[in-house]
Image (cartoon, rainbow, N blue to C red; front, side, top):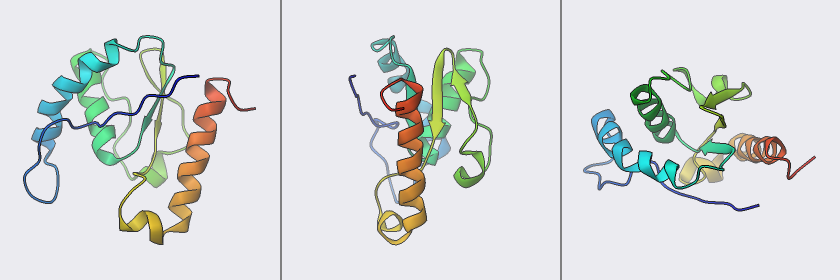
Length: 123
């Protein structure tokens, strides 16, 4: 099993947050990266930014939204697909909240376990 990590936004950001226009524009850089890994079965979306980026890419591909709008807590646990790839929305594994909120750490671990199960590496 190979694992590949990448960032959803490959552009420099200005200020604290990342604007939707920046995510949309930078998803044009991320999109061809997916083509390099055509055998990938699972995409882990580890933040709201990653969720927005995949939705922009899917919209350009004519698929529409992959992940519905809503808080990560409410949209986790459902099956989503981008083409043939299973998509898992989850939380970012960094920042102060990761170290404070034990429930988020548990949810991230569960999301990773289910993703590994989906590709047949964990039973």
